[in-house]
Image (cartoon, rainbow, N blue to C red; front, side):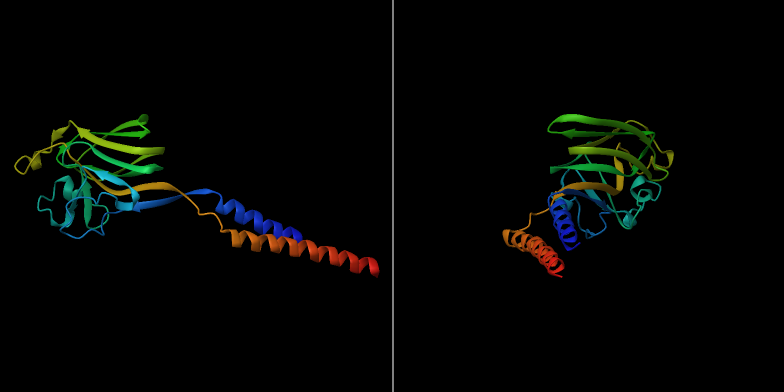
Length: 212
């Protein structure tokens, strides 16, 4: 019985420490200070390009997507110059995010997922300025995500304030594979001793029963 328990412990530790797990995360961007204007280059272990941060509570044009698109207070992210890219050295899964059009209703949002330069996923949606919409992508095993937007027609309420084909993003949900660090040699020696102790204990128990 002791041997079985010891072996199970060693097996469980081996499987756990030798495996790779995906840790889900929701990026709200809300920890950035009010003066922060861009997403830091290596934020959350990802590489962000053409991604700006804005305090949505400070937006005076309350009908624009910059204000409407806030899901968690107070920051949102948007693409100031067309396409926004998010990449990583390790593969990750892009689950989805909340998207809102900044100025144009009927805005087309295109998401492309790549691995080593090869396109694996390509999906497009239509979004507007009225409310944030959670778009579920589930791009698995990518190392680069490109988000771009175009088209649509300007919300009549916003004509006197500005225009453009930007999108607003909040609560970016993803998971990244993280390999666990193997046990050091001393730990394996200890676990081996546990098993040997179990073997020795079972052997001595058998001898005791035979002598009786």
